[in-house]
Image 1 (spheres, helix red, strand yellow):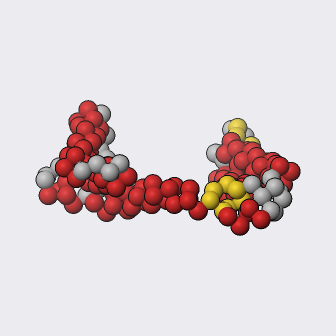
Image 2: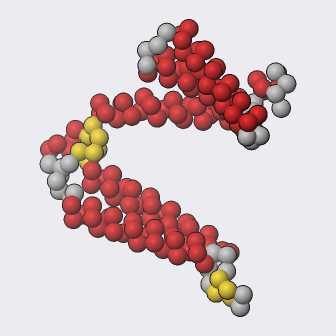
Image 3: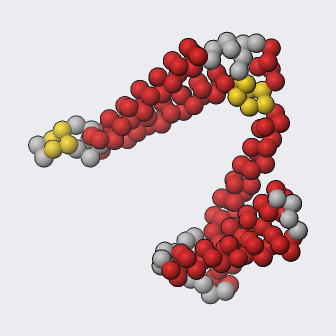
Length: 166
């Protein structure tokens, strides 16, 4: 690698990391399919037959990606992401993680309202009196569409219980 690789995460490392993770996923698919039976019985294919071979294809794709990383990117010093861009990505990714946590604890509607309001306030630099009603409006829209329109209940928390929405 060149001296530029010290300024960020190298593309080679990312390519190998993704190939490794997808390979592990493929192996897990194969293992799970083997548990339920990946062969052929008197009645035809067992339950894990198709998933097993999909797992094999995922592993083969991962090996091809790893070989491609060695051929194309090893020693080039290409930077996948530098520190400044990583901070921008984190500024959107970390609130999504918080949204998932809040939604699991307080319910999807409250989490959505807080996420939309927070994103507008901190990312979009909107005033709070615009962000907060927009977050509530989006959450209310989701409630009307899913709960009333499609009759599909989404995850609710204690706030919805206080309002008797169950």
